Amino acid sequence: MPDLLTAKQVAERLQVHPETARRWLRDNGVHPVHVGRGSTCARYRLASIERAERDLEAAAAPKQRKDKVTPIRRARKSRAPTIEECKADLRSTP
Image (cartoon, rainbow, N blue to C red; front, side, top):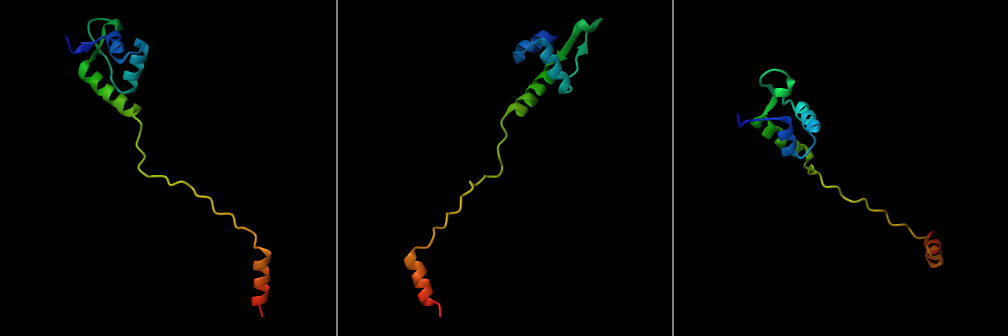
């Protein structure tokens, strides 16, 4: 039965604690096959483990942003008119 792994073997493969491996597998819909009597003889199918690994890697990969964000530019501060500009405006008004 080389295609069946124990929770400890799965944990070593994923480099996590066996209980963490069980929780990740359960959360991804991978359920053990019970071999013999009792729950201590639970084994996981290798194909299911590999599929769950791909799903975990895809979930952990950083997502690419589709839209490019343009930086916000600050508006230029308007400066106060000089005295000469005010005098010119007064002269040009009728």
